[in-house]
Amino acid sequence: MTDEPQPDLRWAPLEPKPRNRGRVWLIVGLVVAALVIVGVLLFFLLPRGESPTPGASGSPSPSASPSASPSMSPSASPTPTQTEVPQPTAEPEPTPITTPPPAADPSVDAFRGQVQGWLDDALTGLQIASETSGQDATSVIESLQADAQRLGETAAPASIDSAWGTAVNDYIQRLSALRSEVAAGGPASVDNARSAVNELRGLVGL
Image (cartoon, rainbow, N blue to C red; front, side):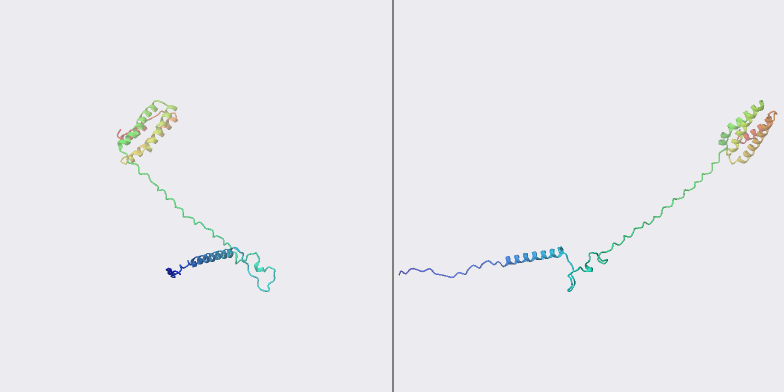
């Protein structure tokens, strides 16, 4: 035999095998979760009936009748009707009564401009009536009477109001007397009526 060097044999530690403990727990957890889900689905999907009591007959119990008891089905309470409260209507505001302001007192000059035409026509009409008779004279006197009414309706200045009213009434009365004379067939005596007209003209400065 030859003396050859022999290799040294040494013990080396073996590599530990990978542990599969974590994978096992993961699989176990998934299985448990699946079982829980299946159990929950079965609990909600399967019909739940009352278990028959021992010794009970196979005929259905009256309590398990399909008719729902009053306590099981909630009764629909009537919805209260909402009553509309009438809103108070706003009262219309009273319309203020406006009194027209009193007419301004005219001046004598302004009043003279209003009545001068009628007073001029009075002298002309009396002259015509004195030259005619019968129906022609009557028509002229009636026209003068209408003008006399307008003279009385026209507001006179306060300074001559009283005297003006008295003179107008006197003139109207004399025209009435003149018309009666002409209607009776007599001559038209216009002196009294003309005197009344001149008094009116004097009051307004004519």
